[in-house]
Image (cartoon, rainbow, N blue to C red; front, side):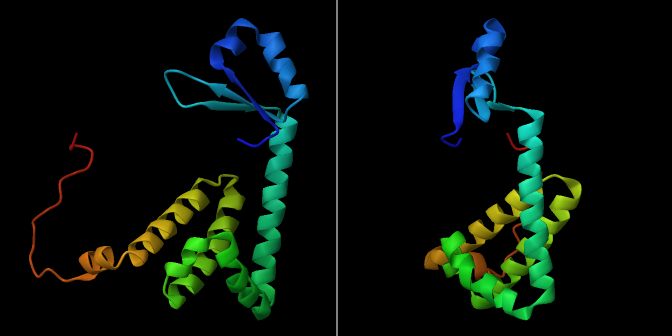
Length: 159
């Protein structure tokens, strides 16, 4: 959570709802800490719409610039290591693939008003960079073991 957020226990919202909700006038978001589940974030509809508008505008501008000017793609490739230092471990061709996928995924996610796919894509690329950063792991993952270990168990059935 950012510095402009406050945090309270969920029970405080339930027991002292007026006082707790009044804190949204001082802070853009309220982190609700829960004992038995994931914490929640409470904000106003206006603030949520403003955040959505900003993310959408930035996404549309980035996508439009990347489509119109080849120099923008080069600029994007130059600034990505500042935003995502871990891409330094990716092969050069993968850095370009990452840039293209990032813009395309952001654009598609914006059309659905759901950024979960962008977050998942970033995590997947970061894990790829982690594999490239560790020579032993990279060898283990890229070596043909010439052996079939049989079908993989269904992850849902493994407890």
